[in-house]
Image 1 (cartoon, rainbow over the protein chains, first blue to last red):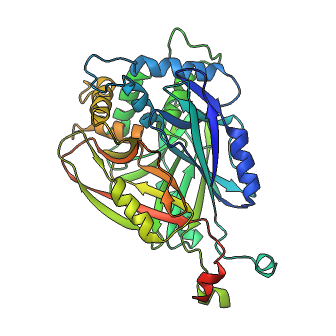
Image 2 (spheres, chains in turn blue, orange, brown):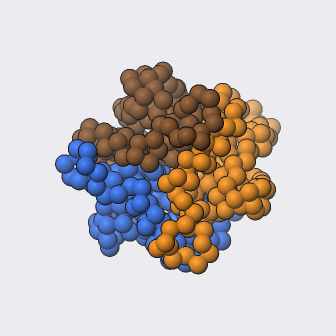
Image 3 (tube, helix red, strand yellow):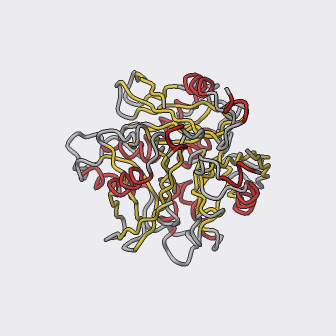
Length: 143
Length: 143
Length: 143
């Protein structure tokens, strides 16, 4: 397993981590398998969305705020960041992407984002790779 | 890894793909393991929900639209489909189902759905299977 | 794969299952790998969120209800629990946590919750563990 450290710059901040995850998959030497990306925080999530036009992320943050506003009069959590906790559960803490021929099978428009909902902070992302190749190949066993 | 091609018929369309995924798991010959279903798109998602009464999907689409309406005056993305991007992140791009004794452990009411939020289109779904059987069994090693 | 039986106590009930999942991972003997937690229901989900202050869960349930209210005049599903189905898809049926050195890499504030959105009921949770160790180590092969 490899761990990334990511810095967010504002309260709601989607930080692209695609290149770092791709790098970990390539370094693993796994040909076919699964790559899980996991965020060990409760006010940040992980998602895949468009990596081309930054206005998509702007609109995601904007529209999410319309139904998960920062404040609600009946909230009890003293830290006052319950909305960030809810956004984290809505986006999720983990995602899993197949690996084929040594590459993540991301779509052409897809990027992997750490989603901070209570930044700016330093955040951690864990990346774990498992292989489908359960039976060692002969050339590996002999080397 | 296997890849499915799925055609959606309208803007918001939930297409059942359970049988195709079950088929891939059975063909893989894996006894115990994990099956990841992944959508390489940014305006479509993947989910598990009721497969019996079609009115459930009707109600999901209806209620989702109440808080993620298609238009918002401050959206910037030129394509005008930002709501579909948000729905994709809320539902997620991947899900992982355990395999036991060669079968997906889906509940009796569960079906796997490709969720198009910006159809109609032709969509792709990747299905990857990994096994828990990491140590080759003797009969396999000898064959 | 191991299966837990969990009892919820009210309609919206988040039940902590972290200890049971940790136990399964430790019993598996897997050093490095992935742990998938899966809910085979369509009106319950699975999530990771704060395990320290119970007011966080209170606020999650409260704010979720503001945009996914129990009733909508145009709902068709006869059982009347369509909102629970939508919440299940928003939170998701599966999550996957990396295992390193025999331990789930949960963050210090993270707990794993079964989220019942249509309780009280008895619910099932499946836990599957896979290892990254695809080539048997010598000391294991010899024992």
